[in-house]
Structure formats: C-alpha cells, structure tokens
Length: 172
Image (cartoon, rainbow, N blue to C red; front, side, top):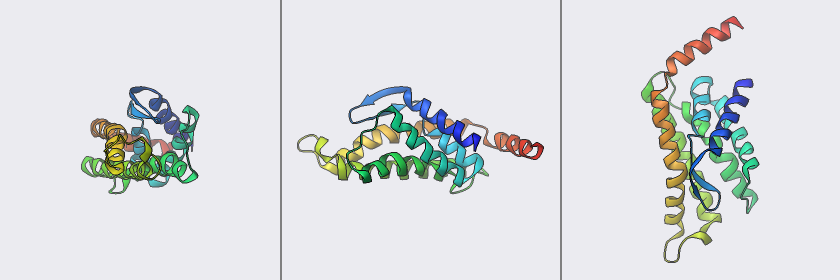
C-alpha cells in the first residue's frame, strides 16, 4: 500500500514538470506515466490499476478541466488507470515489459482520444475534423510522453528490482 501511494505521488510530481504546455490542460511532462507502469510491472496489475486511479485523482489537484461526469471518468480515471495494464504480457523479459507498456499507453491515449472526440470537438480548428484534432492533440501530448516513458522503462533493470523486492518481502 505504501509503495502504491509513493509511486502515485511520484507520478503526480513528475506531471508537474512540464516541457510543453497545451491549452485545455494538456502537455508533455517528465515521464509521469512511468511510475504507474513500473508499479504494474513490479507489483502486478492490481497495484498498477490502483496506482493509476490514485494518480488520476491526484491530477485533480493541479486543476481539473471537467465538462461532464463521463469526461471526468475518461480523462482522470480510465486513462490513468489504463497505465496499470503494463504487465498484461508479463514482466519476465524486457520485450514483454515494453510490449505491455506500449499497450497500456495505446489504451490510455485511446481513452483520451474518445474523450476529445465526444467532449472537446469545439476546440478543433475550422476545417479540421473532430477525430483528427483529438488524435493529433492526444498523440502529441500523452502519446509522446508515453513513448518517452517506455524508452526509460527499456533501460531500467526490472529483473534486479524484482529480485530486490522479492528479497525484501521475505525479510519482512
């Protein structure tokens, strides 16, 4: 429980460090998706999904842009919770961890894309389709950040971390 809280808090802190800020509460931050995906890869899907929900709720502290209850669920609960699916293929090998993390990012971006299509179409520039606008907006924010997070995960020695966690849980 403490690890879930700590990694969710780290995800929130990383989300405050933004490289690029977009209108309507978007942008590219310092790999804020990574702690939730790591939580899933190291402690399992339940821990990852729980951490994603907590991260989404913590994100409300940074100023929420809510236009409808369903949009709140899509953007602040389901999109962050989807990051907890990173262990869907397992974490026994680096390839499985990367593929699972990629799937988690794709699901997260897709949920945000749906929210954009349904609730934020009015922000599309004249002449641009709502779906294209939502895709471009969400891919260039959450998609890019997710790819950066996956690159960092590729360099993290997951097996060493899992071994250390296993050793510590036997001692405790």
